Image 1: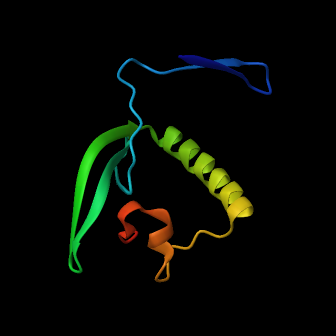
Image 2: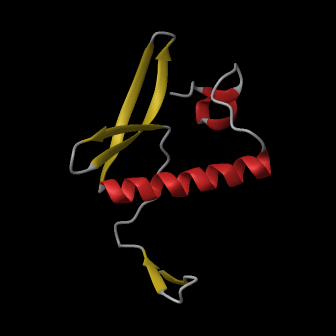
Amino acid sequence: MSQTITQPDNTRVTLEKSVDYRDSYANSVQVRLSIWDFFLVFGTLEQQAPDQVRVESFQGIYLSPQQAKALSNVLSHNVAQYEQTFGTISLDGPDAHQRFTPGNGPVH
């Protein structure tokens, strides 16, 4: 399956999914960096006990510093649009994690 998008400068971008493409849910992202790249490790976090958390990592993605900055800009823009539409996203408070993570676990 592919999709073509035309950019404002008339550049056509074709988006294609590889045969091994999969959608996944992550409620944990660890970021590691070096002078050459950023490494994002995605996983699922589960609260085992009040003082114990288990994170199962399932995918690591390397990004160049330029691509990491571009991702940061895109995420900031989309978070602002989300909050304009649905209200402020709170990471604090007793019910914040209940709205945004499955299983009613805490936000980390």
